[in-house]
Structures are given as structure tokens and as C-alpha cells.
Length: 339
Image (cartoon, rainbow, N blue to C red; front, side, top):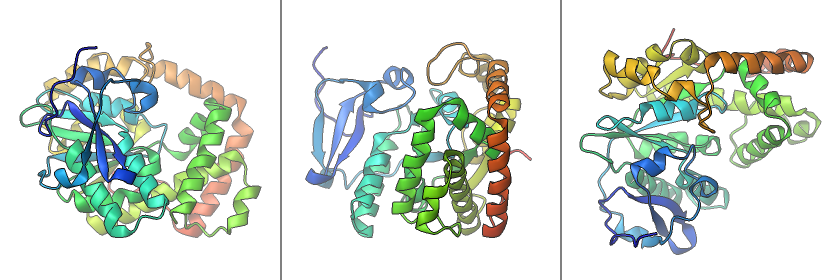
């Protein structure tokens, strides 16, 4: 591996990978645009050893200006990685898929950091992520689900940003959970644990109730909490800043979905560019593995999982609808990009 060039804060290829809270510093690694495109997530598991890194005190980042950055929040298992990749187009936008910086800021909050310190870490992290890779480009960043409780903070410190909340309808989401097996059933419990610690769940349950709920009930609770949160944000921050998108509608009409997202975020994608993206490899391969994977393949896999776990899914769907009615949570969130 060749030696890295001298550190330059204005160079986006010096990518801000971690917030080192014990040192009040940011850790930078070298990542080209091609490096970003080569991995589904910007995590250590996918990035591997990137060679030399630089730890830069947060005080040296304070003067960095805010760039054009927009958010793609999501409910999980809804094509968010695919959409981030589709919007990654030179001259238009750079797509960042689940930077660990969001997890670090969330962990900072979970470990007891006070509001002003968390806001400062979030502000500096977003300024670093917003550095464009090309002239005139925006950055579209997809945080992990773990960071969703801080969405309002992110939108406050990045006050010109627009956001899309992409979600799979509840039935589709539950099918994804059973299709992915035991690791996913464990993941939805881990996600709920983090949400409970951040006070993100307000659906009328007592703490002990969760011990008596099944994996799919836990999955539905996390899904409902996210929908309740983003519906409140649409009302509080205005539809001009936050829109919602049904992943099943995106799969059915990707061109219309891309046009709607681009319009909401002010990205310069015309119909010809969108047709090129939809006809290209992005929508014909698995967003995680890169293997060939069509919408027909996806439908077949979901149908098989639905058939195998139908009784469990139907029971939890009915239960979740009652919970949603009691808590006043709409299963279809407001301000949809595609009606």
C-alpha cells in the first residue's frame, strides 16, 4: 500500500470515519470514491485495514463550513442501501451508507454525554461528512437505524438539510425479519434495547412487557416507534424538510421514486439520467452482496418466507395494528413522496 498523502481537511478522500470521544478527536482514513462504491456499509467489517489513519482534535474542525447534506433515514430492510447507491452519481451527489460516525455520536449519548456535547459532536460530524467529492455535489447520507432517535438533532444542526424516511410496510418488514433468520431476530432485540435506553419507545408498555413478547412483536415495536417518531418530525419540522417513501412503491416504480427523492432534495437528476440509473446494474443486483438479484427474485423469496411463517406474521400484524390504534400511530406515515 502506497504512503498516504499529507492530511488535508479540505480533501474528502480523507474520510472522517470515527469520533474518538476519549480524545475529543476525529479519526480520518483514506477512501476514494471507488472505495465507497466497493462496500455496502462504511463499517470496519467491510472497509478492513485502510492503512495509516490520522486523529485530528475536534478543535481543528470547528471552522469547517456546512456543506449540502441530506438524510436518508430508514426503518431497515427497505432498500435504503440500494437507494443510497442509486443517488450516488458524479456531479450530482455522493452517497454515504451508514457511516460509523453516527453510531459513535449515538454511543456518546448512550454513555451519558450531555446535550451540548452531543450536539457539538453531531454538528462537527455532519460538517465533515458533507465535504463534497466533486464541484457542486451534495452528499446524501444514510445513518444506521441505531441513530434514528437523534434524527431531530441532526436536522437541527444541519438546518438546510432535507430528509426522506424510507420504510417497508409492516408486513413486508416482518417477512424480512423471518427471512433473515435467527441473527435478525436477535438484531431487532438489540435495536429495541438501544431505543429503550434512549427513551425512544412510547407505546404504552411497561418495561417488563418486552420479556413476554416474541421476536416479531419486538420487531413490530421498533418499527412502530420509528413511524411514530418520524410522523411527529414531519408535523414539527414541516413537510418541506421531511418526506416519506414506501419501499414497496419504490420497488414497483423506481424511476418515479428517484425523481421524487431528487426533487425533494434538490438534486439535478433529469428523466434521462434516472432512466440510465434504473436500467443500470444498481437495480439488478443485491445491494449487499452485488450478486444478480431482480425484483422478481425478491418477490419469490418473500413469498416463500410468507408461506413458511404465515401464521406467526398474521398474529403479530393483528397485534401490532391494535397497538398502533391505541397509541395513535399511523401505519402509513404522512407526506408520502409517492401517493
